[in-house]
Image (cartoon, rainbow, N blue to C red; front, side, top):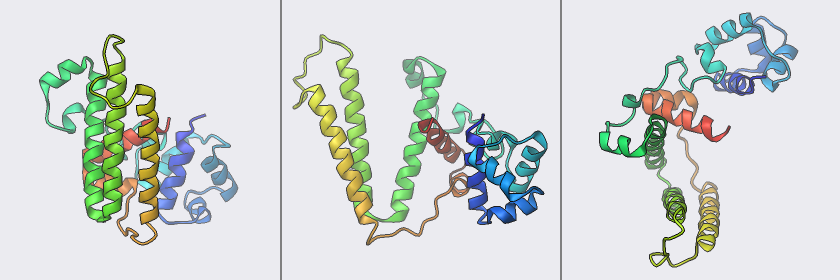
Length: 213
């Protein structure tokens, strides 16, 4: 069973801000059956898939989770960031180069949204978490060669990974705590991300999908 379909189907209805009852009426089926589709308890037929795609104005591939773009388009490498031939060769494969570009596009959007939200604690927490993520990855790369010495580091590998994980958790807690007094009114949804950031937005949605599977 395709488990992306129930999630996307439910998300689209909620983005449209309509009840399950209303969606069922519009899609010409009973609410119980739609509920089963949204919960992944039943698989729909082709006729319903086509109706749902037309109703929510998305492609069938998007409904099935085969693409992060609502119109069903596929991300090309050149759609994301300026081509860096040397860096791409060093990465060694198209898929790795593509992953790099998707991550860069995601980071651009993260910092853009942080600037719009204007929450200093949140921004500082994001920067700290990202710094720690790069540090952890670098430590793993360094550790790949057993001959390496660790004079450039103040901590052992095990301690460093524990340290980075703990401080990431602390930064996340600080960000969450800041929301009580500094709530954002910036709408963030698959629709707004695609509308405002176009191909970069599609790249971020691909990253999110990949992170959850």
